[in-house]
Image (tube, rainbow, N blue to C red; front, side):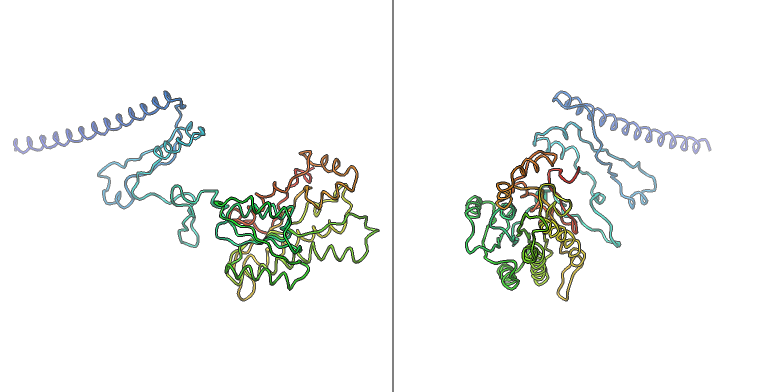
Length: 403
């Protein structure tokens, strides 16, 4: 009996010693990790970084299934991976490697990223799932696309066409002249070979619906796709309402509204035919939103207001498909610039004394814009960067309509 009690006591003592050793090793391990972390902070401080750490994520080494099978036999260890906040403040590109090293994942079965969403019970993978791939600028990449810009021989249309070409698109500028303007030729020569884009010219009058349809259909057939259209063709007549006649009003509406409508419908047919989720940008004006001081052109203003409403209506009609061969996701937006020094506007500035000074004083930036300042807007509206934008009116007017 005494020997049995002795054996039991010996076994209990051995078990207690074993648990003590495990606890001691755990404490030593944690202490070692803590000393290493403090050493890292000290090194960061000596290297000029602030000794502040920003927790990135917490990963659990043991999965839930493993935890259930272990039934509490071993402690669950959590690791906090962090990177110094100062790394994020430093503009040096070399810091990106330090951030990546400090925040690398150690779990063999990481949780879904925050950018992943659950839709109808299925895990939807984000577009960017690989480091260094599909960066933000790639949303603006137009390589492999075919696009059209009406009124693209000069002025605002040409500037936006050049922006698309610089992003890699094959751009076709449609205008009524038999030959492209000198401005177009200069822009074509300005394109760099590594841009990948091209500028082409096609002659057509947007008031000639048949010619316009043929031109757009030929371009789409050549590339077996049509990715985007900017309807920038327009005319203006500065005249008091009492001096307008029927022909003046009809001509302006034929170009500024009906021509824009026919451009959009012709483009949409080709997008539906080739199953392309395209984007259409209708160029209106801030004059469609306000009674523009110093610009007495009531029919022009009314035509631009109609274009803004047209974009809303078409986006509703084509956003979820249209027709038997329709394709979901054709986007339609409007661009409403403020005063721009285009060839058409420059003529008004020369003919109307004091109008330039009036326009410059009416916006918050105290100047009139240049066509090149709208390159980015056109590219944004036709690229994937605006993939969830439709039925909207993008106003870029130097703050004119904001006060």
